Length: 127
Image 1 (cartoon, rainbow, N blue to C red):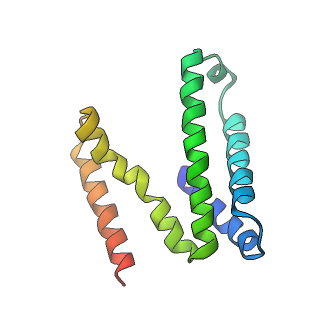
Image 2 (tube, one colour):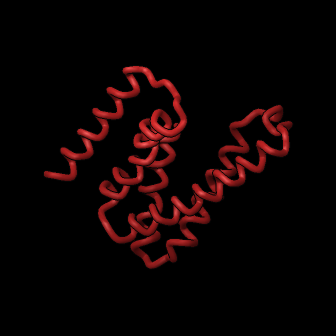
């Protein structure tokens, strides 16, 4: 679902950015739409969480909002496919970071998928 949301958002925002709409406004509207879908999908019991969890969610949302701005800026200035490829890299690169800095044990499938994804990106960008 996350990948579909990312692809859909990228394709829907390109015409607005080409028309000259400010990337900050596009990023805000995209983040607002994501929040609305999140609230629709989650169960009501998900809202009864400790305060520290909501602080973490707010921090993650703020950081993600900044990322959405940079993706919007990239989509406005380069090909949509290239911007989508580059915006998909951070979650892939988080796996080695989880292992190295936090000691999370990852399966061989995780490592293989990371290597395959990076290899695919290299192939796409060098052609």
